[in-house]
Image 1 (tube, chains in turn yellow, orange):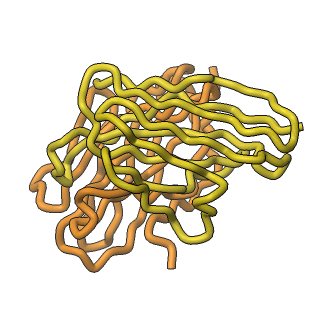
Image 2 (image 1 turned 135 degrees about the vertical axis):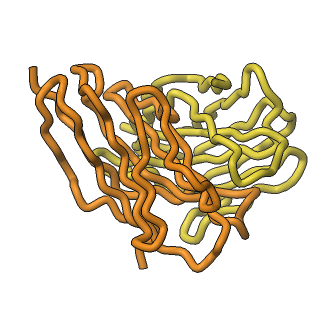
Length: 118
Length: 116
């Protein structure tokens, strides 16, 4: 299957700082990338959908000014958690799908980034 | 209303036995796709199997098969000959036709534990 990478795999930061997480599709062009958040022992919650070259679409309840998403190229999307606070500590997972736009398209997931805000 | 429901928060299975993980879904869209993912303790989501709403046959991928019962709106995952490495969280997910370009909706997950 296709490969999606995420960097960093884990990060610890102080409250008030900003953290950037990168998501890359390594062997295919991802027109659409998704960012999910997962709390311990819970399911994945979609935060936003981003299409290359356009603004991200955020799910209800997700603050767009806090979680900045940039999808500048077909292989890279970034999520920046601005002014992070302890309640932002979570597991963030990105996923990507190709340009087919078909319902059968598999969504490939990155390995996730564990964010801990002190 | 929940679009994807996984009623088993946790399950045990003996090594080498088969196990069925339940998934029911709710949609009025005639075109949809159902996916199963495995999430080991490392956190990575691993794609296992896909079933389309118009597929006539149940999907199979190696030891994984999907028991698709459209009228009941269920898409249970069957793992045959369980292995210790199958211990993980398993998520059922759906993509609806009108959202063909968009997101998967996930169920709450089932934690499978394989006993030696």
